Amino acid sequence: MNEDSMSKSICGSCGSAEVDEIKLKNCTACDLVKYCSIECQENHKSQHKEACKKRAAELRDELLFNQPGGSHLGDCPICFIPLPLYLPKSILKSCCSKVICNGCSHANKIREWEERIEHSCPFCRKPTAKTDEERDKNRMKRIEANDSVAINYKGVQQYEKGDYSRAFEYYTKAAGLGDAEAHYWLSHLYSDGLGVEKDKQKEVHHLELAAIGGHSDARFNLGCHEWNNDNKERAVKHYIIAATQGEDLSAKSLMDAFKIGLISKEEFAATLRANQSAVDATRSPQREAAEEYYQNKN
Image (tube, rainbow, N blue to C red; front, top):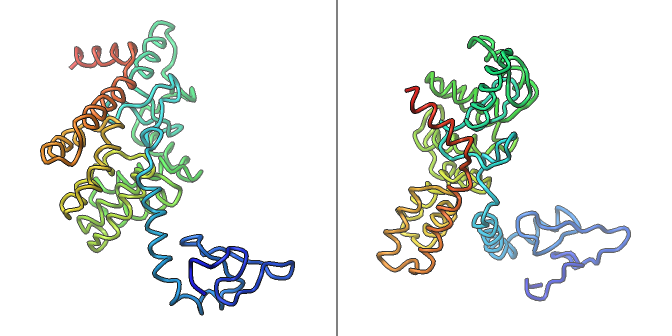
């Protein structure tokens, strides 16, 4: 039985129809065929392998090159404006693991000063931790609650201490909870062989999962990987997606692609407009006031 004539209502190996006593299950890799048993799936493996591998790759690319709705950072939970990709323009609160933009954080400090009240988190309103010990205690509570952001941050702390094996453990746990940032950090460990053996395949795997989750830096790194492997059309696809998220290095890389004709003038211009639009979407008077304040303070 070949793939073209195969019906999804019958077993791809033995031809049994799906009736009350026979339940068919899809091939989990490609969804092209169904089987009535594990034995039938194994028997049909050699005939189905090539088509399955091809379709699985197509499905993966459909997912990989789908334009994400925004960055993995999402919106500030207070002002609901997209968080800037430049991380120092936001702050991670240890009490609730929420990432707050500097605009909302600064506005909260002004309110506290004007009302002469105790410092507290602008989101959950818990008193602000005054020492590193208090902050670590808060984060451990979030880790115990399986908070992926807190778990990933703990991994970053271990990474900065040089304990890459522990960092790997925390990143792996956070990644298992769907944290795109953790997948991005895992790609670095596999790239540099820190706490694990160097593994290019696993590095790319985690970059892809991070990119699918909206991580623009991971997307840019994938573009570089494809470009260096002479898969320039795939590289351009990655650069376009990352650039439209507001990632600047991808926008600059597209200039090289434009010069050798891999992207049209119209598409290049449209991507640059989308890039600027993404950056503009992260701005607000409140954030600009905070930036001016911190610049003057320094």
